[in-house]
Image (cartoon, rainbow, N blue to C red; front, side):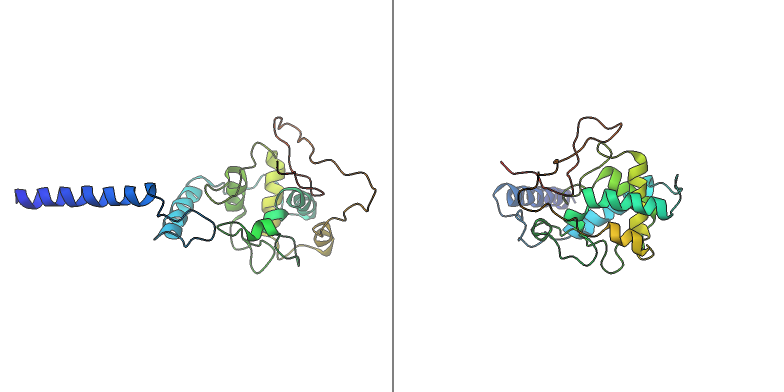
Length: 202
């Protein structure tokens, strides 16, 4: 019995050591084009789903109406479209180069089958290791609810809201460049990306 226990302990130790060596010797998937690690998606989704179910709000402080959708469309244009896409527009090169790929929220069902509270949680907190940032230091609470309600009802929005979601018209040659970003009331310290221009990489 003692030999069995000792063997089990040694086996567990060697297994753990093998996992550590797999990661620290550069064999693990790390680049965008690498295949996912075994059970990577399953474990990541399980952890995320459990956290969201525990913390997401179940009531909504603003109405899901035309006013909210129009305001949410403006927020989406400025902060979300570059990764999640606009209606009837191809993904941006940045989105195509991400892993995991950001879901196209105006194609297919998007997140219309999710509770607005679930989408709100993701907007507020972001999702680790996916490229999805948190917006609680960029947007105010009303803005986060507006864009969450827009996405939850993306299959029901009016033509007026769809018009608001069309790609912006860029200025012609010689026109002054629009500002890169504007501050958000009540949220100092960060600058949202303008829907007209992307920041320059140094």
